[in-house]
Picture (cartoon, one colour):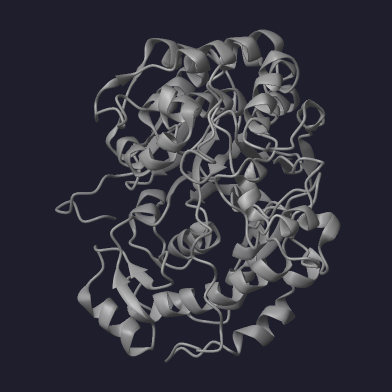
Length: 529
C-alpha cells in the first residue's frame, strides 16, 4: 500500500469494466462506450481515435498500430498493422543518394500508415460497432476543438522547429509560428473532414481515393516515391503471440517486426537473479536491469526485422539456455565495458491504452507515429501527420533490417499481457520508443517480484539511457542510487525528461475485480465502473 503522505494516487477499482489511456478525453470517450454496452475493442478504438486528435505529437491516423486481445476461453489474438516502405525504395537507392542512415524528416522515412486499417480490422474481428460510430468523438474533438493539456503542450513545444520546416505542419498545428498555449482550445477542421470520410467509407476512404491521392502528392512534392498502390496494398495481419515465462508468469508479446521479444530476452536474463531480495529503488536492482537491457537491445538491433528477412528464429532468441549463457556476462558488482549501449536516438512518440470489459475481454492497444509529430510532414488539404517509421530501418546492405521496398521495419511499439494458468492477469504496455522493452521489464518485475499494484508499478522511478548514452536517473530517486550506479562504472546523470509512460489493468481472477493505473508522466487517467 502506498504512503498516503506522498503526492501519489491510488489505483482505481471496477467491478464491470475499466479503461486506462494517456489522456482524460480519450478515457472519457471510451468509458462512455463501455457504459452503453460496447465491448473492450469498441471502447479502445474509440479512445485511440480521440488520442489521434488530442495528442498530435504522439499519434495520428498517419501512424501504425499493434494489438493483443484476450477473450476468456479462447486463444490470444495478435494484430500487426504496421506499414511497409514504398515499393520503389531500396537500400541501393539510398546509398547512391548518400544516405548512411535514414533522414527522419525525409519523405523516404514515411512508411504506409497502418492505424486506420488496424482500427477497422479490430472492430471487424472483435467489435460490435463500426468505424462510423467509433470515430464520432474524435470528429467532435477535431471539429469543435480540444483543450491543450500540460504534457501534450510540452511535447508540442518540443517540435515547433520541425513543424515550421513543413508547410502543412505550421498550417494545422502552429499559431503565429508557435505551439498553441497550454489550456487553449485547438481545432483541426481539415482532420475532422478526413475523419468524416473514413467514418462514411471505412478504411477504403483513407487508402484509396482523394485522401490517398493527397498523401502521395504531398510526398511526391518532397521527392518521395510512394504511390497510391502502396497505400491500397496495406494489410493488417493476424499474428501468433509469443509466450515466454518469467517466474510463474507467462509474458505475452507480439512477434517481429515488433520488438516485444526484447522484453522477453531481458527477463530471461534477469530470471537467475534474486530481484525480490533487492531494494526496488536501489542501485543494485537498476544495475542488473541496465546490464540485461544492454544485452537484450544489442540482440534486438542485430537480429530483429521484418520476419521474412530475419537470420535467426524467434524461438532461438528467447531460448532459456541461450539467455542463461549470456547472463553469465552480467556482473552484479560492476558494469561490463564490453557490452554495447544501444543507439540512444531511436526514441519514439506513442500512445498506449488498456481496456477490459464486463465479459472479461482484454485489449492491449498501441499506436504511434515514431518521432514527435512523425516526419513533420502534414498533408495541407487533409491534415494528416505522416509517421517516419522508416527510421526503424538501417541503411546497411546485408543487414536483416536494412530498408527495402514493401518491407516492414523493426518496430519499437509493443503491447503486452501477462497470464497465469492460461488466464490474463495483467493487460499492460509502456510507451516511450526505445524504453519500451526495458519498461515492460521494469513494470513486470515491479508487479511480480515486488508485489506492486498497477499504479505503484507505473509510479515507480525509472532508469534508462538518454540521447547521449548516459544512464539517466529520474529525479525521484535518491542520491545513493546515483552514487551506487556510478560506483559500478555507469556514466550517470539526472534526466530532465521522464522515461516513457504506460497503462496497466490487473484482472483479479479470484473475484473478478479490475484494478487499473495510469502513468503520472502523462496527462491520462484510468476509469471504470
